[in-house]
Length: 286
Length: 270
Image 1 (cartoon, each protein chain N blue to C red):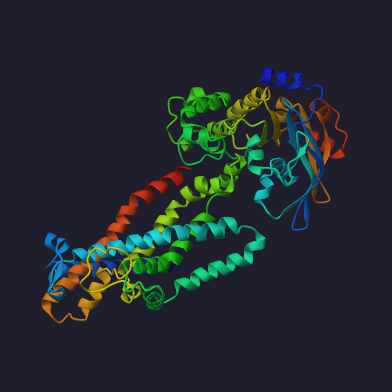
Image 2: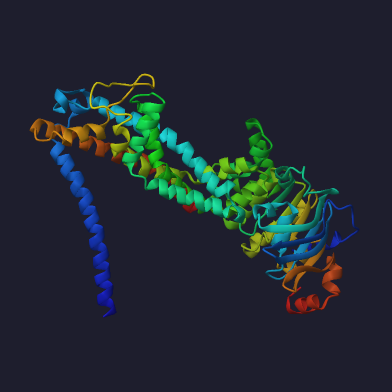
């Protein structure tokens, strides 16, 4: 009886895992299969033409990279600051309440619908600051959007740091900032990388935050300056093409652009894989 | 082995000016007393052994001596610890500089991810702003002092984690010695080691005594007898650690005055 239950439980778990894998592979396969008709070198090296039904997606790729890299630049230092504040500077019982507020705030921020961020960006950057549509506004909004995810991943990593390292470093006479630079940051790099990966993968595919304050469908190239310097980006491109998807030529380009976006997200994961593996190996051997 | 014992006994001699002394030191946490009114004298070029049962507060006491206790903000400390007559709890004391003068070795070796050389330089290149050209000389000197140079000189760039546990503990000692501390606090440094590695560390302690004051926390009476010049025995009274007897090794071991020690020594091989 117990063996039968055990087998049934194992089968259920395996079925759940298989269903998830099948879903991901199915979606990815369907996107690539449908985009096959346009996926070639010309597609990634040419500019869009004919309302998205012809040409390529060169500027859309570059625009997405600009937004993602800006989001990375905005989010990484802020996340490190938030995580160090929570785990190092607010250490001790007397800061317990502040820590709890900060952590709850991060989770609350993570649940803000991305379209609200887009509207906030429209009000703050486009109207108050008078930037119009700007790549920087988009990067900042995406950076803020992924900030809670990255911060929480980093906080969890910092909390799990063996205390013996901190004591050994402090025992050698290192100041608090030196302990941060020599122990906290190097050893929490895996948390930062995995958090950023999760966040950037989400940011790369988000349309709502860049809809009002950063992206246009056409007429933008490489942005120069900040004010009135929009970008064209893959998610927004896909969003607009999807509304016009009855035209078969547009459909092919839609799926092609989606496959490129998917490829970018996978490439991000693959790029970070060696770093994560090396860090895990070091942690294991330590 | 015989040589070690002979050296240890030979240095049971007169008292000098203390480099570090604790006076009426009490430690509590959340209203619970951990240590009560401890008085200690640590003299230059001498080994002070701190003995006591688990829970007597030996490690807590050791951490108060270089203010590593500050890492636990909940600890409340009263009384004083003086380094060359100056309180280490004074407002203007540079705690980081203090800790680099009073080096500490922990029960379990703590090696950082990185090479053997990186580990030796971990503290000194940050606290002393050691120029890069001076690194190789400092690594060699520290590893020689820790009796590890001959075993690792051909693989300084290898990960430190590949060393045996005994070698890792000596590497930790080299890392502390590279910072040129005046006093060494050793918190049961051989508790994770086999007999042969324990002997190596003990011989090392006896060599280091020529230039450093050493405080050695140990459970092992034989070890204390082999390497310590004087001992301070902690016991638990009314749920708090207390200094029950201290003095020269031969006096405390051969003629214990307190009933706790008499009972304890009668159970343990000396």
